[in-house]
Image 1: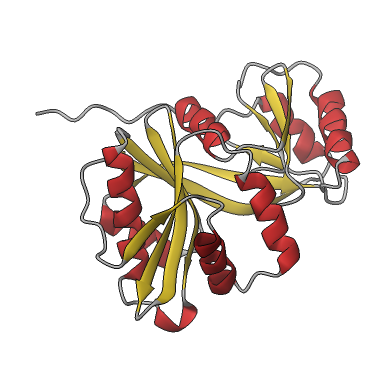
Image 2: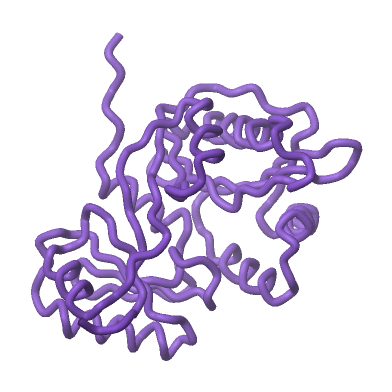
Length: 252
């Protein structure tokens, strides 16, 4: 039986927009601005969703940058295959630096074997937040920004925590939009890596998503993280496309 092709770049990006939203969102044609108190670049950046939406790129970059600065966020553009050529050229001419080159991985979703010591928890459940804070060594300010963003998520979502001997050793979250489950906030106890804990967390969450009706799984992974890439490839994920971010640098 021939497997159906995976969705388009736009389908993945729009699912990501719902699964990891901004606290404030403003559209400018097919360009979108998101601000969330600085928690993650994705939720605090501008992005173009139509490569044909080229008009007035320089002025729109200034407008988006000003909008972000007013909200206490440094100007950032997320650059994907959907970015208008005029946007890319204007950022290049203005000397914006490229950072955080990353990949989107995806796969058709089948039933998974959940971990016997895994728990599915609401995103604002104290046990989930405690696990995330402990594993990330996050301070209270960062956790406050994280909770504010999680509070505005409207799609089906769950926190995942894997325990060993009663202690959290791996955690992540998953959210479903348009039958695509998006994974984020993956973190493992740094003293217990290479024990299959991240894989156990992924299988536990993906099984939840499959039971909720998701048919595709997707996630983002940085280009300079081969260990994470190998983990996801072993689970069945494959590379779909690249993206990166741009921040102001020295004008040319």
